[in-house]
Amino acid sequence: MGNRPAELKALLESVARQTLPATRIVVVGNGSPLPDLPTGVDGVELEENLGVSGGRNAAIEHLRACGDVDVVVDLDDDGLLVDAGVFAHLASMYEADERLGIVSFRIADERGRTQRRHVPRLRSKDPMRAGEVTTFLGGGHGLSMRMLDRIGGWPERFFFAHEETDLAWRALDDGWRVVYEPSLLLQHPWTSPARHAVYYRMTARNRVWLAKRHLPAPLVPAYLGVWTVLTAARTRSWGGLRAWAGGFAEGVRESGGPRRPMRWATVARMTRLGRPPVI
Image 1: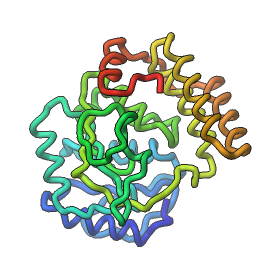
Image 2: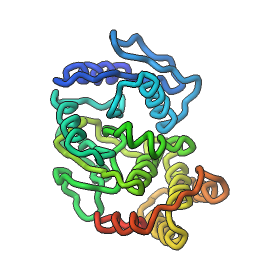
Image 3: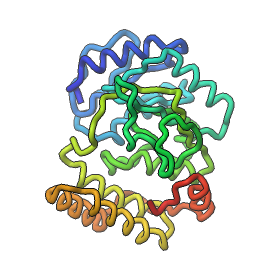
């Protein structure tokens, strides 16, 4: 969004230091003009802010038009690749597994701390435990282009919040693997998701859309009921609760996209992986 020029410069320098060079590098100006970019870096300027989902889709379409990319790596502009071997390791993972769809990086701050919300599991708080998961971290991850060609891109109407889960659920239902690999590190400042003014509304609205788009009918009320109780118990702000209630109502009234409920076999698979789609 154009408000982190120093961080973007540092990120691009860390990308340039990778032992396996990126085939193409794209920076999206999401409703904002781009700064001068290094030679070899493509810029895509959008006339308006399309959110996380829309911005990433614009980058994917640019890469697809180039026709020479097998794996897409998304990186937040305030992130940093400390290790120069991230891309090489990621490429070896995809080369070894043709059903690998999504690889989630570990996110840690400059002191090596990983926030609980950045560990994509329910039962384990250990950020160093690798393995298959049912969602992934938006700040740093890899996506198979073959997978994207099959399941589609990011859910544009979501703007931001839960767009990673929407993509992960579609990937799992199509038979792809979603893997968390903590050795792939993105250094990122310690932040709170509530720093965004629309956090509560988007979180509620998009969670309703997730359920309506992807869950078998009997699981929709169970999923939304569990999250309503958890939100009421966790939220300490009356203003936040009001915004959440407004977003929930918006999600019920409006459509977040076509409904394609996942197979019960996918529900069972997610349950085996430790996160049944009711929480």
